[in-house]
Image 1 (cartoon, helix red, strand yellow):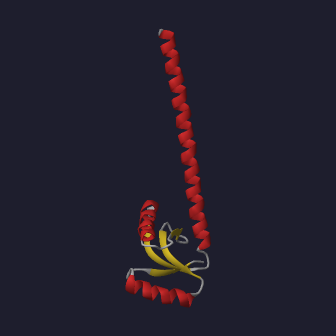
Image 2 (cartoon, rainbow, N blue to C red):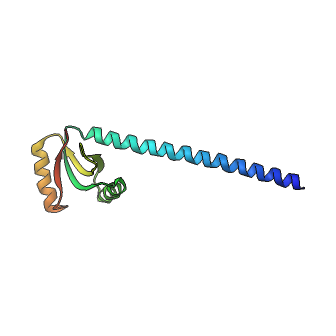
Length: 121
Protein backbone atom coordinates (compact mmCIF):
# COMPACT_ATOMS: atom_id res chain seq x y z
CA UNK A 1 0.00 0.00 0.00
CA UNK A 2 2.87 2.36 0.84
CA UNK A 3 4.53 1.50 -2.45
CA UNK A 4 1.33 2.32 -4.39
CA UNK A 5 1.11 5.64 -2.58
CA UNK A 6 4.75 6.47 -3.44
CA UNK A 7 4.15 5.53 -7.08
CA UNK A 8 1.09 7.76 -7.12
CA UNK A 9 3.14 10.66 -5.72
CA UNK A 10 5.87 10.11 -8.36
CA UNK A 11 3.28 10.12 -11.15
CA UNK A 12 1.70 13.30 -9.79
CA UNK A 13 5.13 14.98 -9.59
CA UNK A 14 5.93 13.94 -13.15
CA UNK A 15 2.62 15.32 -14.38
CA UNK A 16 3.23 18.58 -12.55
CA UNK A 17 6.69 18.92 -14.15
CA UNK A 18 5.23 18.29 -17.61
CA UNK A 19 2.45 20.80 -16.95
CA UNK A 20 4.98 23.43 -15.82
CA UNK A 21 7.11 22.79 -18.89
CA UNK A 22 4.11 23.13 -21.22
CA UNK A 23 3.12 26.38 -19.47
CA UNK A 24 6.67 27.76 -19.89
CA UNK A 25 6.68 26.85 -23.59
CA UNK A 26 3.31 28.54 -24.10
CA UNK A 27 4.46 31.70 -22.31
CA UNK A 28 7.59 31.81 -24.47
CA UNK A 29 5.45 31.37 -27.59
CA UNK A 30 3.13 34.21 -26.57
CA UNK A 31 6.11 36.45 -25.79
CA UNK A 32 7.54 35.72 -29.25
CA UNK A 33 4.23 36.55 -30.90
CA UNK A 34 3.98 39.81 -28.94
CA UNK A 35 7.53 40.80 -29.90
CA UNK A 36 6.89 39.98 -33.56
CA UNK A 37 3.75 42.13 -33.53
CA UNK A 38 5.72 45.01 -32.00
CA UNK A 39 8.41 44.71 -34.66
CA UNK A 40 5.78 44.57 -37.40
CA UNK A 41 4.09 47.71 -36.06
CA UNK A 42 7.44 49.50 -35.95
CA UNK A 43 8.23 48.40 -39.50
CA UNK A 44 4.81 49.48 -40.79
CA UNK A 45 5.31 52.91 -39.25
CA UNK A 46 8.51 53.54 -41.20
CA UNK A 47 8.39 56.55 -43.52
CA UNK A 48 5.09 57.59 -42.05
CA UNK A 49 3.68 60.54 -40.21
CA UNK A 50 2.22 59.28 -36.95
CA UNK A 51 -0.26 60.99 -34.63
CA UNK A 52 1.06 60.21 -31.15
CA UNK A 53 -1.28 60.15 -28.16
CA UNK A 54 1.22 58.97 -25.55
CA UNK A 55 4.86 58.14 -24.94
CA UNK A 56 6.07 55.81 -22.22
CA UNK A 57 9.29 54.26 -21.00
CA UNK A 58 7.37 51.29 -19.59
CA UNK A 59 6.00 49.06 -22.40
CA UNK A 60 3.09 47.86 -20.24
CA UNK A 61 1.89 51.44 -19.78
CA UNK A 62 2.10 52.03 -23.53
CA UNK A 63 0.05 48.89 -24.21
CA UNK A 64 -2.57 49.90 -21.64
CA UNK A 65 -2.86 53.39 -23.15
CA UNK A 66 -3.12 51.93 -26.66
CA UNK A 67 -5.95 49.72 -25.43
CA UNK A 68 -7.82 52.80 -24.17
CA UNK A 69 -7.73 54.29 -27.67
CA UNK A 70 -8.67 50.93 -29.24
CA UNK A 71 -11.81 51.02 -27.12
CA UNK A 72 -12.57 54.39 -28.73
CA UNK A 73 -12.33 52.81 -32.19
CA UNK A 74 -8.77 53.68 -33.21
CA UNK A 75 -6.46 51.10 -34.78
CA UNK A 76 -3.60 51.91 -32.44
CA UNK A 77 -0.10 50.54 -32.48
CA UNK A 78 2.93 50.94 -30.28
CA UNK A 79 6.26 51.81 -31.87
CA UNK A 80 9.68 52.54 -30.44
CA UNK A 81 11.01 56.05 -30.92
CA UNK A 82 14.27 55.96 -32.89
CA UNK A 83 17.40 56.12 -30.72
CA UNK A 84 15.29 56.24 -27.56
CA UNK A 85 13.84 54.02 -24.90
CA UNK A 86 10.36 55.53 -25.35
CA UNK A 87 7.40 53.53 -26.65
CA UNK A 88 5.00 55.73 -28.65
CA UNK A 89 1.27 55.09 -28.88
CA UNK A 90 0.15 55.81 -32.45
CA UNK A 91 -3.54 56.57 -33.00
CA UNK A 92 -3.30 57.17 -36.75
CA UNK A 93 -0.61 57.09 -39.46
CA UNK A 94 -0.39 58.81 -42.83
CA UNK A 95 1.94 58.63 -45.81
CA UNK A 96 1.52 62.30 -46.72
CA UNK A 97 2.62 65.14 -44.47
CA UNK A 98 -0.21 67.47 -45.50
CA UNK A 99 -2.88 64.89 -44.65
CA UNK A 100 -1.18 64.12 -41.33
CA UNK A 101 -1.05 67.79 -40.32
CA UNK A 102 -4.67 68.32 -41.34
CA UNK A 103 -5.78 65.28 -39.34
CA UNK A 104 -3.57 66.24 -36.37
CA UNK A 105 -5.23 69.67 -36.12
CA UNK A 106 -8.67 68.07 -36.12
CA UNK A 107 -7.50 65.39 -33.69
CA UNK A 108 -6.17 68.00 -31.26
CA UNK A 109 -9.45 69.92 -31.43
CA UNK A 110 -11.73 66.93 -30.92
CA UNK A 111 -9.87 64.06 -29.25
CA UNK A 112 -6.59 64.88 -27.50
CA UNK A 113 -5.16 68.39 -27.35
CA UNK A 114 -1.74 67.01 -26.33
CA UNK A 115 -1.36 64.74 -29.37
CA UNK A 116 1.62 65.41 -31.62
CA UNK A 117 3.17 64.32 -34.90
CA UNK A 118 6.10 61.92 -35.04
CA UNK A 119 7.88 61.50 -38.35
CA UNK A 120 9.43 58.05 -38.65
CA UNK A 121 12.76 57.71 -40.41
